[in-house]
Image (tube, rainbow, N blue to C red; front, side, top):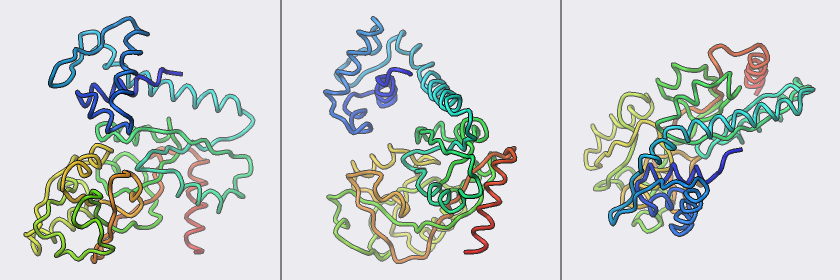
Length: 298
């Protein structure tokens, strides 16, 4: 529906650099510049001023930037609605999916309970892992999505949705492929002495705060660097571009091709599960009950 060059435009505006945007998008800087040039030609507008130190939005670019994310989100909603209309003889569960919150665990659940929902189909709706916008995505449960599935130990998230725990993911660490620890198969906490460990700032996650307290009390040789409250790809990029170590989880081992994820000899983990609206409709609640009953029998 929308011109996908808008995604590139937003990345360049956020990164203030063609090169940095290329790293985020996993394409070449030349490809980024070509897309921006094509978009400017298409709109007949100059969107960026190019400078030796980077790029900055023009007045016209600022106007486009203000509404670009809305246009993308609205376009995705229209497509979801159109898909629903095209299959109006079906009932549909809409499942949000992203790089850090993939839908595969939901699919595993679905194939175990779908016999109880013979008239229902699934529709997967992609969304961006944007640390500034993730709360708005959670808030759209019941409107844009029926379900999300992912790691959830966030007070902010849990204030906006219901959460059915399904299991736990082990806490691990990730390093760049050139890091001295990259060849190790298993780390001791002492292997992290002298390293800078990136992890979310204190206050939102009980599991992360508990781990942080242990490290600060018993392993002060590890320097802790705060990241933003919710991870997105920029956090993984920073780890890949520096000599830092990133606190991560086992299900994110393939998120960034430039990183190696390594288990650590500790017992720390974080819950993952099913997220759904605080005001979920009856069909959603029926699905949640079916999953609960399945978990009891397992």
